[in-house]
Amino acid sequence: MPLRDEFLKSQKVLRLATLGKNRTPHIVPVWYIYSSRKIYIGTNTRTQKARNLKKNTRVAFCVDVGISAPNIFGVNGEGNANLIMDKTKVKKIATKILLRYFKNMKDKSAIELLEDTDCIIEIIPEKFSIWSY
Image (tube, rainbow, N blue to C red; front, top):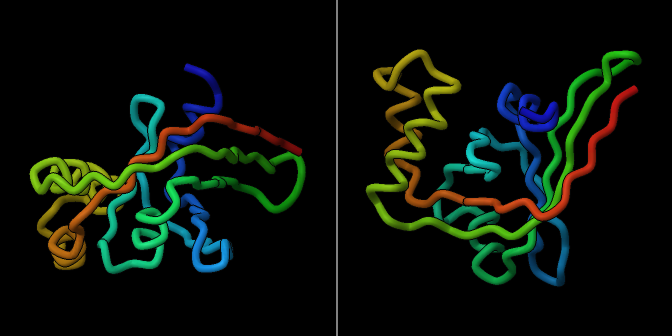
């Protein structure tokens, strides 16, 4: 498995950039899962990122660690995103994402987040860049 894929699978926060009104970048940190060379993010259709994706499917993202050399490493990329709306698929993927952050789905916050998730952002990366210092 390439170092890029190992890194994306191991990290917990991805910064997602979508384009909003007047093509203004909207950048937010999100929880995610990286699987089968795709990135999945649970959200709600009311969020700005989901509303932006309904108008423009182009995205950019960044995952990085470290603040001083030699421990600085990151991956950024760009691609297209789809909104998965099928309730069964949404709950299945959202549960997998949440289990990266909670020990189980009995946690009150996990339950609330799952209930509020009504769509999944599926990113199909087209280009990656990797850096380290």
